[in-house]
Image (cartoon, rainbow, N blue to C red; front, top):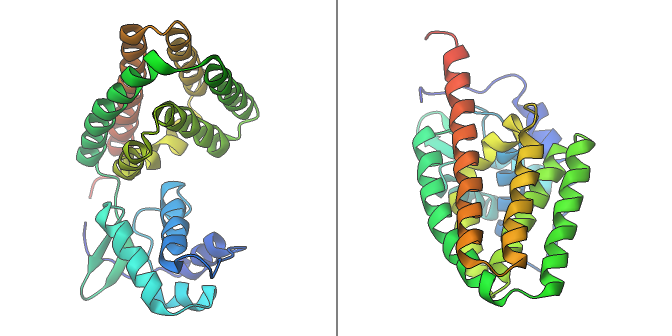
Amino acid sequence: MASKSLDAGSDDKLAEFLRGASLNRSIPLRDQVYVLVRKAIVTGKLAPGAPINEIEIASRLGISRTPVREAVKKVSDEGLVEVFAQNGTFVADISRKQVEEAYIIRIALELESIKRAASTITTEQIQDLEDIINAQEIAVKRARFDEAIARDDDFHRYIAEVNDLTMLWKVVDISKAQMDRCRLLSLPSPGAGHETISQHRAILDALSRQDQQGSMQALQAHLETSLQNTLSYLDAVKASAPAA
């Protein structure tokens, strides 16, 4: 990425994603600021190249710069921002390589997750997963794509939590930061949301039969489809970009 300079609309973008933010002083501020900044980047509210002004963020939130600096460092570790010594901190471009690497991690971990879940999942847990899919379907029909993505994550997280594999999901969640940036942009594509829901139902069907191999195959097919859709989106964006 070339060095950046502050754009005139940066303050407006910053104000938009911080508007209505409320911090709980009883829990670490750095963790709350991290969630705010990460969400702003992942959802596209802060686009590639947008500046991250730590002083301005601290001022708007009414806190010291220290928790903001710690939060931005954590976001930087995930490859979401880049720091230029002479120019400042900016939202990073979406990395195709990091997207592919994230899927390698995600597929490996989630296959182990669902392998374990298939043999222990209960009828009540199957019903909970069905409720999540139904909520996701409603969100897609109403074009509430950020909500649909949240329910998508709920579905995968719940499977990990069937066997209390909460740390597994945390690793997946951190590693998939780059892919998440593509999801909100690519989901409005015709049929994309409905394809995901259909694949989730196939996964659920295998789980309901406690079919370990079938569950793993359905999940792998789902994640590989997601990867190909994401890479196709990135390739299309690159192809349409003006020559440097």
